[in-house]
Structures are given as C-alpha cells and as structure tokens.
Length: 77
Image (cartoon, rainbow, N blue to C red; front, side):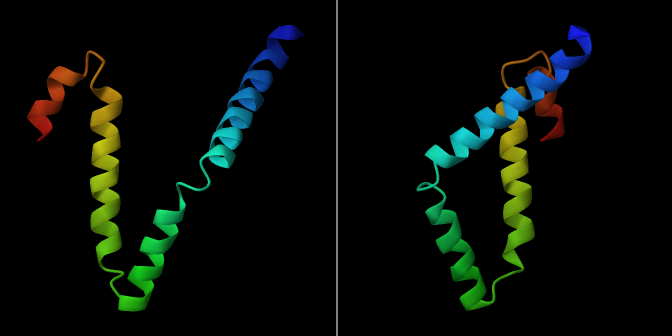
C-alpha cells in the first residue's frame, strides 16, 4: 500500500516545491514579461524560435555538465 502512494507523494512534494519557487521568484519573471511585450510591439516574433533554441541548448549544457555525458557534449557542438 505504501509503495503505491510513495511515488504520488513524491510527485506532489516536487510540484509543491516548484510552485513555491515560482511564487518566490515571481518578481524575477517581470523581465521576461517586458521582453515579450517588446517583441509584440515591434513585431519581432521571428526571434522567438531562435531564443528558445538557445535557451534549450544552454539548459542542456548546464544539466549535463556535471555528469558522465559531459565528455560527449563537445562532439555535438
């Protein structure tokens, strides 16, 4: 019984931690909101896919930099 509930509890705790972190950092997301308003006013929506790819690549490098996969990242770039 406990083994069935444990993953659910862990997922709920993780979601709660993420929600709390977003709540605490809500002021930091203001710059993102201003940037999106800038893109909308200037009609520069073509920049969004480029920025998303750059952000995903940066997250990928940051996440895998401390693992065994880090040696193989250099072959990708």
